[in-house]
Length: 175
Image (cartoon, rainbow, N blue to C red):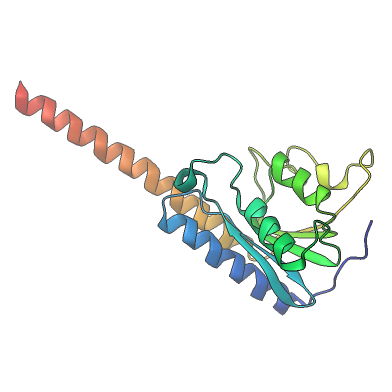
């Protein structure tokens, strides 16, 4: 395992707040609100937020976008000596990308019970069978990270309910 970077609790919360800002960008576009930043030497070198709907690309998760930006910034596919902060536990695809990018440390806010691959359903980042293992820390601003997701899904349910009621009202008027 690569050397992991040390950040104070205050710094971890500061970077997670930056990831939350990215999640808010997704929320504003009616995307699943997950945000990510990659930090090297205390400086953000990559940012990302979900953009699957906006760009019609299944792989445009927050982590993938942040990794791509950090690769360009560093002019290197290896992101050694970095820490990836993400609001929600990475999925299988993103965990694979994190390992392939050689990111040594991931800090996430809230678990992902349905798709999580950093401890919830799978633990790809620390699987002994793989050649790169990642230090994982969880729970940084967990409530805030979970809340933005809960807001998104609640709003989606409310929109569906309102649409259904409007359709029923139209049907009633026609009858």
